[in-house]
Amino acid sequence: MEWISKIAFHRNIRNETPNKELAAELAETGSKEGIREISKYMYDKNKSIASDCISVLYTIGYTNPELIQDYVGDFLGFLESKINRMVWGSMIGLSTIAQFKPETIYKNIDLILKTIKEGSLITEVWGIQILVNLSLCSPKYKNDLRLVLFDYLEKCRPIDFAKRIETILPIIESPEENEIIDRIIDMKIPELSEAQRKKLKTVLKKR
Image 1: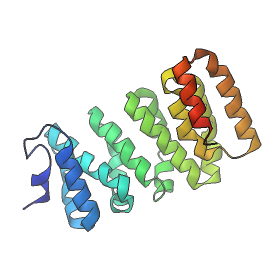
Image 2 (image 1 turned 120 degrees about the vertical axis):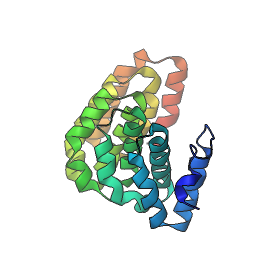
Image 3 (image 1 turned 90 degrees about the vertical axis):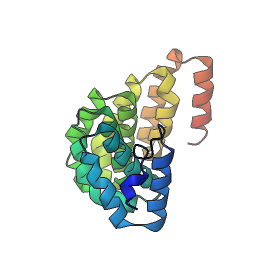
Image 4 (image 1 turned 135 degrees about the vertical axis):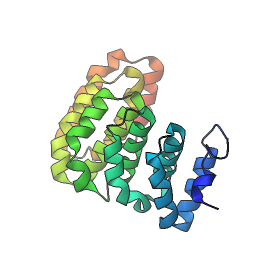
């Protein structure tokens, strides 16, 4: 049986369960041949097939990112896709392999920043995760990207603020960085509802 026959489209199932099951099987077996087969179908003219296949790859990335690191070029290429699912799916894929391919990803930082700015909410969320993961790889990347992340925090919606703080906290180390975060928090507090403030308080306990 070909691996491609196991995706949701070919099983006539309209949810992600088959793709998750296939990703789990490929991640567990480490089948490079199977992953290679699925990766080729990310370029299929059928949007549903392409979407299922990128879903399989980025889901593998959650648990075994080493297996998909060689597809960094594919993910970067799909950031310019007209299909939203391929764009945010690529953002997820890139975020999971940033630790393995930081130089390649960072060389395309302008494209990533442009995609964050112009993309959907889920594209933005995972794009920010890429910036954080790159920052964790190198002091240089962190120095270059931290102002972008701080600016993002200042402008993000109140409903998202606590979650975005949680995403960025891993790179906050120095007294200066903590001071900047505290200033941003003080600035945003008046915009937050009581529930949002409680959520933020819970997040900040992890500092």
